Length: 392
Image 1 (cartoon, rainbow, N blue to C red):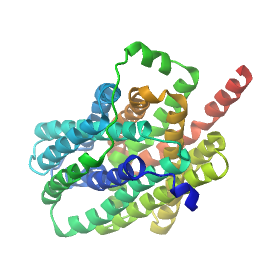
Image 2 (image 1 turned 30 degrees about the horizontal axis):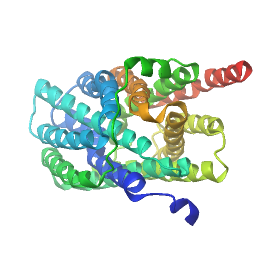
Image 3 (image 1 turned 135 degrees about the vertical axis):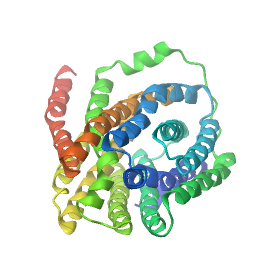
């Protein structure tokens, strides 16, 4: 990482979105990974209930992702980011207040809407505000800072939850969301433009885009498994305390952060190398790491989780590079949201499958099976790449 790369970054367009992503990731770290413990141990929800709740987060993505992306192309993304932060504050307060399943379902639905608005709008802001910079380092920094937020969130959540109760911590997160609102005036204001749905259909119904969406769908199944089973595996299979769970997760998140930043630098350093070898290596590391981490020995499990984190960092980088290459910049909000929809469907399917499976068979099985699925993406992906090369 040298000075010539860093001087190409701009504060409002590059650095500020990365730090905002970091802050929001810190906020949602508890909900993403520690909430299943709260639902199971305190509210006494079943595995099917937990799977349904996390599936609801994905349903909001499936239903609202494209409209959110579409509005990001018509409006300035920073207005939607402001709305998302306010909705996040309301939903976090609700999670810390309600105790019955149906009200909690409604609060989670609102939380899913808020997180999707924020994520898609911040991505649109990042893509649309990019100047002539080295894209690998830029997207690597963005994903690195997001994972730094998850790292700090996991560490702090473990300590907070060991001394405070879940509801009080969730209400504290509501205030943090309102603090992030202060960033709004400094975000770049990007004018929108009127587009027709036909424009997006023409962009998306291309062979390369469909292949890109399909492999992301199958890869995203493991995120559904992690959402419903990862924290419970650490708690009940590795017998970790809340602080131990936070440290374990923080170690992985930090690995993902370093991986995304390093391989973003590596991508630019080598003149924008073809992303396909990076994709293959990321899938292998992610899949094998998820399979072997379920062995019930802490050092062995964590070591392979680190390997998994390296793979996930590479995949995050490749995803952003792919979106940037595949789509027209002025319509990238809607098109990127369609790519995100494929991951949301994957998380939804994974949550519904692996939530009950973890409860019935053991919390390690969803993680290992989803790792096997990740590895099985490779053969058809290689075949498709070779087929595309022949057609070209």
